[in-house]
Length: 225
Image (cartoon, rainbow, N blue to C red; front, side, top):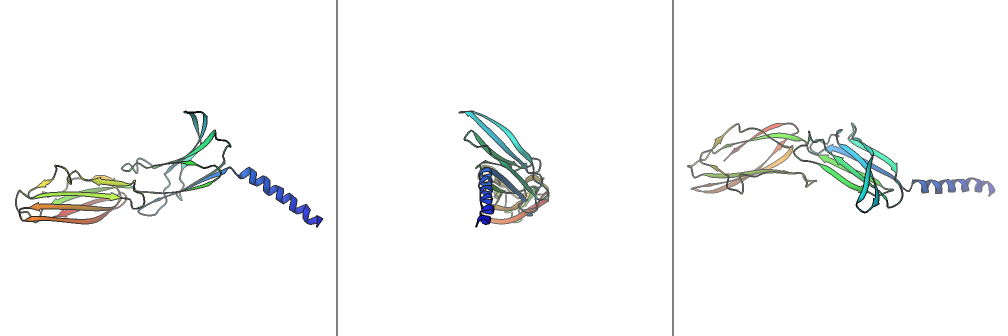
């Protein structure tokens, strides 16, 4: 029995000390991927900020870790947070604005000390779109066509892009339109929905379609109505 106690007591003390020392160890793990392809992104900025609160409205922050996701799209940082209410920690993630300039992405969160924090980021790169129009069934100059196209990230609603100046305002396309080669517009890559409606002397018609704009691709959509 004495032999057993010699081994058990030190192990219990060691476990107790280790638990006390590690209870404020805090971890942040980030995984960043391209939403459309699933490939890892190695250019997402990550920062961990330590805030020291002296008095109300008097806080000073310093970076304790900053860098970019690696080739696997990951970023990991582990540290022992300072005890007390006078210290707090903030996580910041920001996309490369040159690559994702159509949809500004920034993720901010306050970190709970002693916890593991996992963040998943799915970003949408830019593509280029040109929409051409041909009124195949033109009747006369009284034809009026309105249209819009839009994209919304199915998992992250903050990613939304809508082009609708010719939808619900005074702008519209009149007569026998034949517009080819209108020029490309930079916008988030992904699946778009396009809607249109046409008013003619003979009546009213409407339609809807979907199309895909890939990362860095230049796509022309021909709207025939």
